[in-house]
Amino acid sequence: MSRSKATKKTKPFTLLFLAVLAILILAGLYLRYASKNEVATSIAFYHNGIDQGLDPNGNKFDIYEIRDVEVVSEAIGNMEAGSELDAETISKAVTVNPVMPKNILEDMKSIKENENMKTDAITGDGYHPNEYRIGLKKVKGLSNAQHEEILSEILSVYTQNYYDKYFVVQPDLFSLTEENLMSYDYPEMVDALSHEIFILTNYIHSFKQEDAFFRGTESRTSFGDLEQRVFLLRSVNLGKLDSYIGAYKFTKEEDKRIELLSYRIKVEENSSQRNIDKKAVLQSIIDKFKKDTALMFMGAEMAPIELENKSAYYNEIISRYTQASVASSVSRRNIEKMNKEIADLEAMTIPYDLYKEIKEEIDFMAIDLLNRIGGCKEETYALINDYYEKEFFGKMVEQVSEIEWR
Image (cartoon, rainbow, N blue to C red; front, side, top):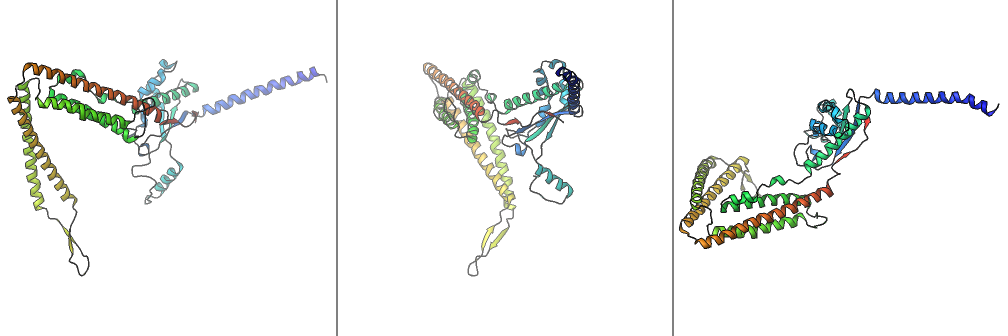
C-alpha cells in the first residue's frame, strides 16, 4: 500500500478521535460546573483572640461583615462589568461557614449522641474557629468566570478593610488644637494639656506592652523611648507651665474664675456630704453585721486560735466604707485648695507690665508644649505604622485554599 493511501485512511479516524475528545472535554466541563452551584474558598485568621471569638481589638469578631452590601459594592465596583451587577443580590448569595477540625466535629458528635457526656475539648460557649469557608452561590445571568472574579474581589476588599480597621493608627483619639487650647482660661489649659498627655501615654504604653523591644527601621526608636519622652513633657514642660500659672494665680478674667471656683466648691461640698451620709449607713451595717468565727486547734498544750471567717459580703461593705471615706477626704482637700485660690485671687495685684510679660511667656509655653506633644504623636503614628507593616500586614488573614466549584 502506498503512503498516500495510508494517510487518506487514517485522516478520517484522526478527525473522529479529535471530535470525540472535544466532546468528552466539553462534557467534563459541563459535569464539573453544571452539577455544582457554588464557588468557594477558605480564609484563615491568625490574630490574638481569634480562638476566643474576638477581633484584634478584643471585641466580638464578626466574620459576616464579609457579606455586607458595602463590601460587595466596592468589590463589584472594581470589576469592568461591575455597574451591571446588583450588590444586594450578590450579597445574599454569599455564604459563610466555619471550618471545624475533625477532632472537634467528633467531640460534638459524641456530645450529641450522649447528652450526659462531659468534655474539656469544647468550651461552654462553643468552639471558635479561625478558618471559614466563603462561598458564592450561582446568580442567574452570571458566567462561572464572573462568579470566580466576584468572589476573588470580595476577598480582596474584605482583607484590605480588615487591615484598615484593625491595623492603622487612631489619630481621632486626640482633639486638642491650638485654637481650642487658647480659648480656655489658663488653669484649664493645664488640665487640657495634661489630659492630652495622659491619652498619648496610655496609647504608647499599650503598644509597649505588646512589644517592648520593637524599634523603627529608620528612627530606631522604641515605644519605651517615646513613653519616657512624654513623661518628660509632663514632669518638666507641663510642670513649669502649671507653676507659672499657679504662682501668679493667672487667669483671663478674675471675676469669672472666682465664680467658677465658688460653684465647684458647692459641688464638692455636696459630694462630701453624700459620702459622709454613705459612711453613716455603711457603719450601721458593719456594726450590726455578725462575723462568724472559727477555731484552729494547735495541739493539746496550746489554746485554740480564733480566726475571722472571710466573708465576701463583709469585705465588700468595708471596701465601700473605705472608698466613701477617701472620696469625702478628697472633696474636703479640694474645697480647701479652691478657697485658698479665691483668697489669693482677691488679694493679688499684678502690675500691667508684669502681667503682659508673664502672659506672653505662658502663652508661648502652652503652645510650645502642644507642639511638642504633636511631635510625639507624629513619631508615635510613624512607629505604629512601622510596627503594623512589619508584624501584621499580610500575616493576619490568609486565603488558604484555591477558588473551586462544589
